[in-house]
Length: 341
Length: 138
Image (cartoon, rainbow over all chains, first blue to last red; front, side, top):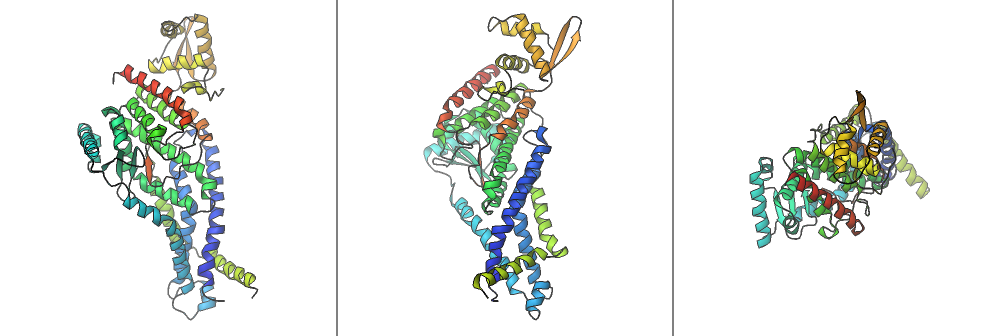
């Protein structure tokens, strides 16, 4: 059997079998959590939900990469390597398999990362400069918003009215026409909301969650609704933190309505014809005007996710790599059947 | 609790008069009140009978939205949930109707754009917000 079989067919089996199985399992787990915490409202177990969403693709991929690197380690090959390449110092097949997985997983991420680097540079038009000066004055008047200094970019042609972007270094991109449509109170409210996204590095979190679903053939089919739920909970969380941070709740609600107007952006709608999520957020904000919200527990989702991925890295080295052996043997058998040898 | 998805605001789960009464209770921060307290506010808006308010408050108590204690010959009511808690409890219905995410990666949008079919909803929400901003003097 040629050495290229496992590095070429193995990743196919991982993407076509292991990841879809993980997506189905994750869907079942999330449904069970939903039934278990039915009374918990929007914020129940959001950290756990995020870990499961990201882990549905991240954990199997990281496990397989880590396991194959373990098999490739010089002098410490596992049984499959010993049987076929006992005399070799490095199991090339396992190393190439790991490389193929990294390349495949990276291919999904790279175009987005590159596009993000090129987009959202500040405009230098007089209007953009005027709005920039106005935002600086608003930030100067609100102590909390000073954290956004040098993190706000004003663009005449931004893709969204206002958004937080930047995987490595989050920044707020404001469209000139959106800022012009709001009074100072509403613009300050919107900036308070975005500040929370900046603080929690949400662009990175969103990107990782998007990648986890995109890389999995059944990710969007089985888990997209759960991602929508998590995103809505994040937005509601940021609304509340904005109010706690000094935003006027009805003014922020006004900013939401202005940003949601069909003519304001060209991104597709959440639920297309359904404004119920927007209504919920607006009504929650108006409720905050009656009674200030309580500070909710922080959701250390990213830390949980990182801990889970670290576990996936360590496990093959301590527990064993039998699942990788199964993929190895299955890929060689599949080629044998296919070629008739 | 009956769900009325076509209705606005807290009317999603309450009948119109129930929703109006709860709006009065929450926005005026009435922590302990009698039928006459609510009647006094509603009477300024329209003609309404004492017995109608009394019956509606009793129904809100049955639904678990209000608590009540006997004080002499009358009941004193108090809200069991804040408006936020009530809305959070109705979020379940919203979550069931959630569609797919927009596929916007690494981009934390303030809000997703709604379709032009929802223009009326936006207008109605905007009216609610303007009214509240006016009340708050902002």
